Image (cartoon, rainbow, N blue to C red; front, side, top):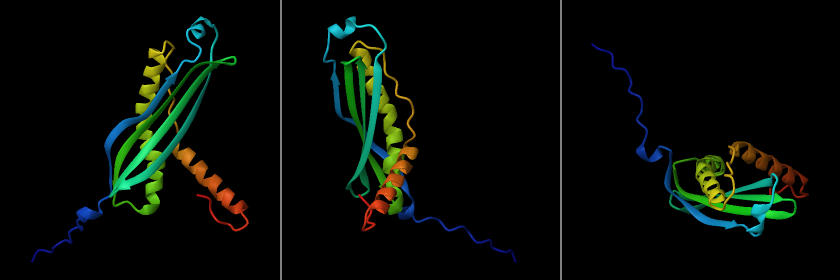
Length: 166
């Protein structure tokens, strides 16, 4: 008599975690060259500052909207050479994922995907505006997420009632 080996349990199709991209799109975009054409006669390396913000929100059954907003400002002295801002967004399918893991997906995985698209928009816009391309360096969204958690925890500990801030 041949001994039967137990077969591994097949995961229920409804319980398999799902993370996918439904749509990537530019939600908002602006480019300003407020001191043109005089700014093109200026010489010197501009001071470039970059601000990054990301957010995520549920849209419906397993669908989430994530938005990465990047603002790049270049100044030479007190004159703004250019300001470009893009809100690169995506609709992501997230299903069968524990509730406590959705926040990190929206704050880390989604912006990691969106950043390459935002990088392309910003680079193309600065070149079309007559400037050298601005190439965004990789951003460690996991470190930013962890820093935000630490800051919220510290703020909650400082509150007299100990309640966490949203």
